[in-house]
Length: 397
Image 1: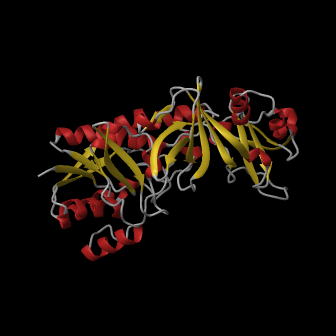
Image 2 (image 1 turned 30 degrees about the vertical axis):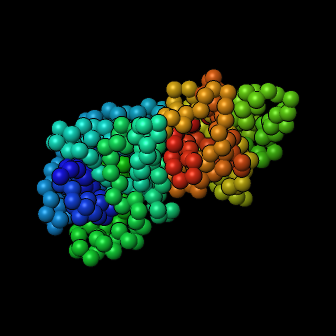
Image 3 (image 1 turned 45 degrees about the vertical axis):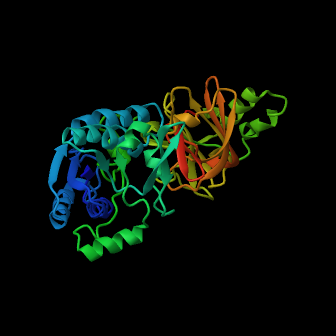
């Protein structure tokens, strides 16, 4: 009998995942991971550790499976939270959930599971895994979940073939409502539990307060950029350039300086903001809501635009620096100088966007069919062929 360790979080998804695996004949053990203790900046009542251990224990008891608790908080702090602080300090916006999966759930947790004699680890992610044979070798495909509204393949865009080979996703073929029905029929303690929100294992946070643990507030200016700013017309220079020059031009962020707009407010630190942000600007007197267009952490300036259709929010392409790309399917990696028609999402739950992936000496360029709103350095761009996630990369610009 194959042994599997389930990351039993106390939520309904991992609870049903454990049940399905037991029904399939696996020797199942539930393990709750403690990855965070500090509550500074965490909104009251949103911390996963408040009652999740109790719920997970009750679920394990109901399913009659062994239950253990393990603490990875020191490693989580080093690999995920410290990285977050470092990225925000640089003016980039990281995705801790992608990092948590790559560095904790399918690395540290996987190794712990192997120490306990497990053949696999399993989670309650809404995604699917498929095994194919190519050139006599096993290849693992990471597929989107059947529930379009809950597909979580994006969060697993950093996984390797080795990690996938030892991973199981039991609820990937189900919808959220079907999972709820199963949990309710079984009388699981997690059946009515709300989905977790916020940072993986930390909870929903007041980001500025959370970041102030290591990043100090610094007063600076908020500058409003007009919609007719000449920089938005940079693509007029597109024709006559070679392919590499065109790609660089399309993916280059707009250039702003204090002289390009007018000061309309003050802030307490540019590193506390992210591109596309609307709330927390404290700027009044405008005809339309204001959104962050860009941040300059060196000059400590936040640039904003008026209206959700402001041209500064949209761009046709993005760039992934060489060394920052990752191929879930290394066999599908394209050689330098070539291109590939793909679908892309640059944030969780975004509809897949048609695009072309170009491999150049300096890295990867993604050119979208339609201009994209809020391309944000530090976030992950995940690329797909059909419903298969084949690779990803950290957005550089």
